Length: 265
Image (cartoon, rainbow, N blue to C red; front, side, top):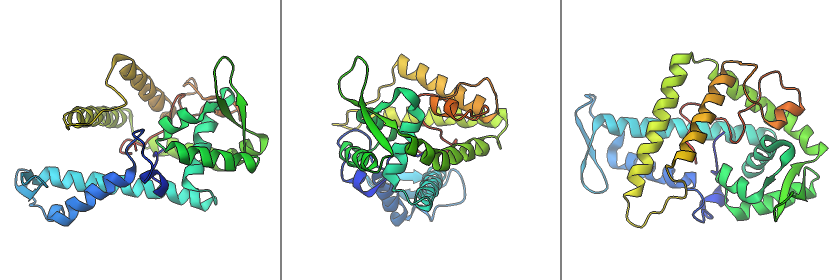
């Protein structure tokens, strides 16, 4: 699932996660500078970057095409949420709570997992609580409150979140093993390259470092996505899927599903 792209999040990044609107604005600037009118040859020079450096035509085309894909995917998720009469932020929060299952999830973890600003999460959580969808309870051995779905909330998730997860998995099943491996490998390489070059920007401090633990967690998640996408009944399932007796169609634990080209925001 795509993460954090609501209007309120764009005004409330708070250093937690770069809001999607930032990337959209950069893409708008690139397109307006002529990135759409690049030469057809892969090694032909394209338009100039904001720094005045020439951008190779293949890079300019890839930049525009990837941004277009991510915009389209974000709109798909936005359409799903609005079709169910749910705001984007509430839909993402419902998704995170559902994946957390019986153990519940803190507002801070929702902020991190879904890249939504803490004020947006707080206000949305309390509205869901007033609507009888969510209940906040003290977690064992930890300070603060954890969000859980009520029976009403679980029924809502069954009608909205579950069909979307199953559609995401169905989309992944359209790729064979080789295609999945390649997509995941390239996604990992692109993310690592972004981290490396973002680190070079003066004054930028990244919250997620490329450490061994993070890499191991990422590799485990990729294995889970692949197994679930191929319909492996032995693939790990989240508590939410177990509650509904989900026949091997659950999402891998500890995160949301992403299609190979989906931009994490």
